[in-house]
Amino acid sequence: MVAMVVRNTIMQLSATLIALLSIHVADEGHAVNPSCSCIRFTAGAGGASRGTFSSPDFPHAYPRALCLLYTFIAQPHQIIEIVFSDFDVYKDHLE
Image (cartoon, rainbow, N blue to C red; front, side, top):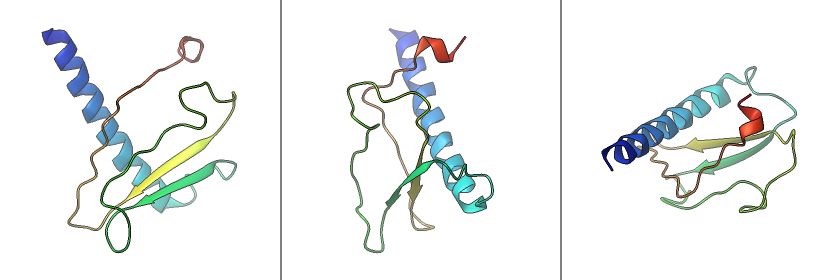
């Protein structure tokens, strides 16, 4: 049980770091692969304060070699929190 809680906490911290890195990469312009589809979420200043997102055709698999960039943008005083309710990494990508 403790291992599961630790793993969930690590996943949540990793997701937050990924979101922050995504925002930085999007700002860099040259670091973003031009072939990627960009999905942008904006909070505050006319954007939603909360919402949900998922991969294309979730819960089914999406095509191989699909490149997506999710960008989460908030006002300077706001915090972006991402909570994954379902997360799956295909084994063949890990080998």
